[in-house]
Length: 460
Image 1 (tube, rainbow, N blue to C red):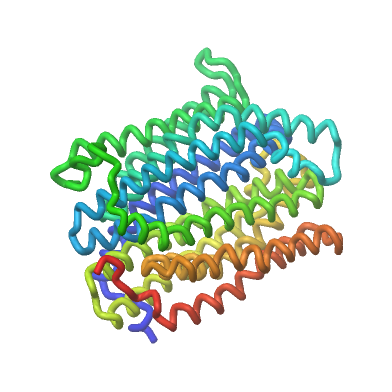
Image 2 (cartoon, rainbow, N blue to C red):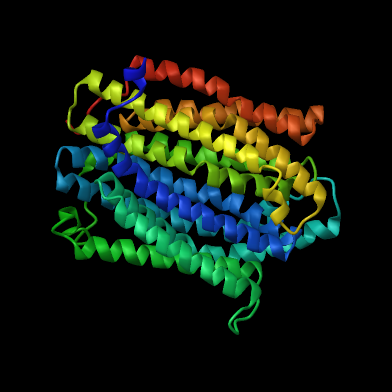
């Protein structure tokens, strides 16, 4: 039992070499996001609610970009394992073209329908004037954030490719630089320090956009200035040609992954909207809870990325099946242990963390209870996340589509809709029941892993 789930030093050196830079980058990013969130929370409850709603909507765009890049990224990792630079170059071009298309579509959607989308989250019981104030702050924030769509998309294409080819340090440095730029500008622009105007939520948005430009500048400049190390960058923009057969294969394998991320993120937004119908206090309370959860989940989410990268490289290098299974089992064990550990820490800080915010005591108490529910489910979230990246690494994108977004829309969303519209359940049991559906996903994931259909070399 010990040998099945615990690796040797060489194993953990390899895992940490991939995971630590991702953990550091994501950890600093989420910590600074936490500080940003607190700064906005000091402005007031309604500004915090408006920003929280917009970020829930922008999460859909962010995951659409992630899904588009990840579909091609499966092939990038395996081309790297087989030392095929031309293949990596083609997958990079696929990412760039897809990101440009999604950026245009995303900006049009939010410019035309942004107001209506925000209003969906302001239908719960509460003061109508407060709801209008939250809408006003949300729109101000959204219109500035649109300028960050393109640099965010291109940065994901560059950083994802570097990680998939074994370079996790440079994206980490770029991410760390960006979050500190974001933090400094937030301090200056939200509150009006150093002679700058106090812009409130608009200042938070400006800081985010500038930080994304900084991140893109670092990863792009580094990549193109080190072509000896990254030969796939040579001739990248001479044309946007992608062999028709490869384009077709990436589209077929990657489309379920893209659609999965898109539908899953939309499902998450719909869940948040269902939760918001339980009262206006739910929106800021969920914002506080999710902020701490995002920080606490950094390690297990980063481990998921590491699982996908390591498994993809092993599959591309044609390791034997038993060695792949053994490594995967141990990687998942690391992920679950990390999730359990941080879940315990979240429970310990559940009553202290909400006190930081400038909001009502009702919101603080509700946030503390939501944090505890999230913390209890964190080990199960860890397992399903690692399972998802494992299945994806072997090109099982249709399976991950069923496992992730189909489950969301077949189980979670209808359940939340029925419980809020017809049963009239309160937020705490509603949230616990919806989060508890991950127990079913754990069982499904275990069966999929055992079947082993994900163990295949896509580049052969």
